[in-house]
Image 1 (cartoon, rainbow, N blue to C red):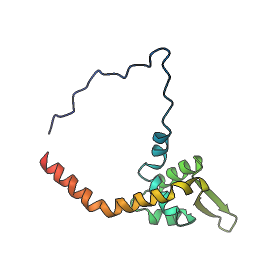
Image 2: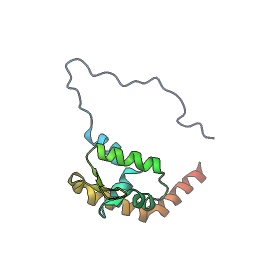
Image 3: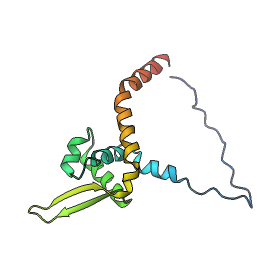
Length: 134
């Protein structure tokens, strides 16, 4: 096993000097953490086709567990990116849909999903070649 990059360093980012302007938290980092996790982007892409029920989402997103889907949906709802609507049918019907807040990012998100799907073989080949060299 390679020993590269395994040394622990004692380098610490110094605190801002007195009087220096403090850099605010990065909004890009916050948004990427919100929609860039393993499942949220996929949920948003599927919901881009229109409202879906929980089981429809579960079937559409390969490999997601019920627990992770529930957590992703709650997080997206909490942050105003999707809505959860309970219809008073018998039995109750629950649908999830995107909010207007996601409309501005829908196109780049769908383009990213298409790019990932199209380039999956090339990424896998590059990963395999790298692993064989190291």
